Length: 250
Image (cartoon, rainbow, N blue to C red; front, side, top):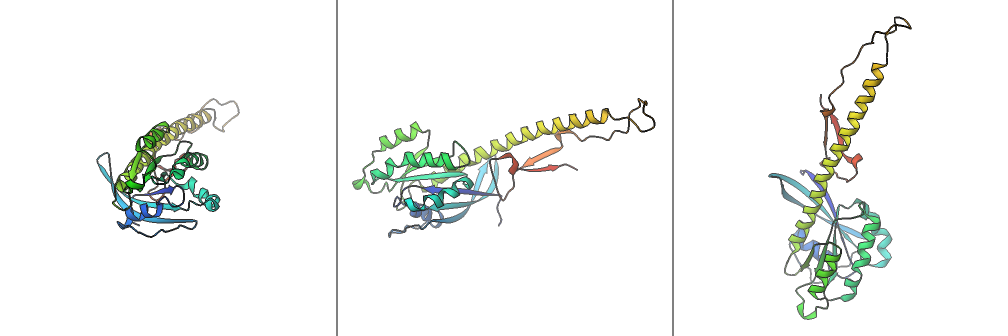
């Protein structure tokens, strides 16, 4: 387990759009010609080197593959809350799968941790141009209305497979970096308030020599408000502030 961050991404979309083939192409570099139906949920793994602000991070990706059938929806939605980003696939040769994209987006917004989850929309099987039913401009306009990045991908040729996940990872890491900054600001504010309350409480204390004595009791040195260091756990990440570790400098 030699990595800096564990990032969980979820691949969703109707049954048969090519989610499993997409993930196999990304993790193993292979294309399966036969249809592979996912029962419930499965996942693939891959460790990548990510460059951020001139630094390298080893990121272990867990890519969850969900079943698209309606009978598995209640099972797969339970995994939405743990995911940090979503690949939403539809089949360019199946218009019904494109029409269902709106419903998938609503499900992600309802069940994921964030009201505005990070989603990359992929029109899959772009190598099958002779069977194409969803126009590129139509798909791009739809994605624009939802403020989603849109790519056309192919597990057979590998077109935009890596790029789609790279874009999603960029968004997740950007949100992660800014969540750290926000948590640091919040914790710093709470720390200052606690110190102020403690100092005021100590100032009200008198020594025990007599009831009317106005001398101050012993004061204990308070650490600086800047003595809190916040950083994400390298093995898990959540957007909630309580998932960040706090450590007081010695």
